[in-house]
Amino acid sequence: MAYGGVMVRRLLSRLYWACSRWALVTEAAPSRPAVLLGAPHTSNWDFVLMLGIAWRLGIPVRWLGKASLFRGWRGPVMRRLGGIPVDRDDASRVVADVVARIRAGDVFGLVVTPDGTRGRSPYWKSGFYRIAREAGMPVTLGYVDRTTMTTGLGPTVELTGDVHADMEVIRAFYADKAGLRPELRTEPRLRDEDPAPTAA
Image (tube, rainbow, N blue to C red; front, side, top):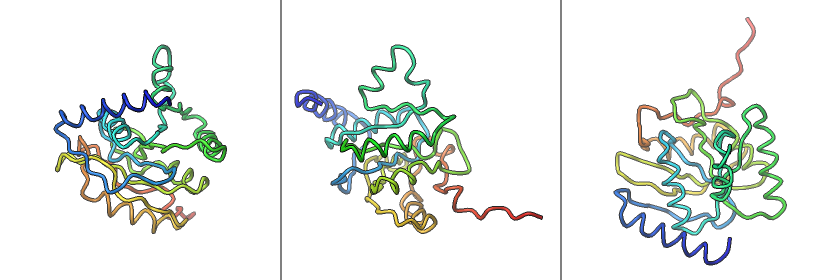
């Protein structure tokens, strides 16, 4: 993005945070391309907060969104804001595409809402984990917490490949984070953590 565009976004974000009832709290912006988790994802307002955080910290971001968001006139707007459409019938292709972009030298933070939808679900989606591992990217824990009216970026975690151990670290961070609609919060757990059912 052109320098002027970056300055405009930073100015807009400063105005937003000056007027917002939310407080921006950040441990540290990631120092290299990272997967940025946005959780708990319980409201469309999470998108506005995500853009506000990224623009305020000067982080170039891409984000994954369902393909229907990119139809018609919204497509160019969503892509301009960093969107990458996801075909849910071929989600694995998205992982390969993102990894290819990173390996080609594209520098960005990839925002992922691992809850998948704004409704309660038994598991987080594992795409963020696969992308981070395949691309060698760390995971930065972004959050929204209505109980304290704070949002921002928490620690950046290097995944080890031990899914359960990595998710224990992530669960500990999000344990007290409620989201905008706490009743829709999904516990940070991947399906891969649960043992496969045995045949009777």
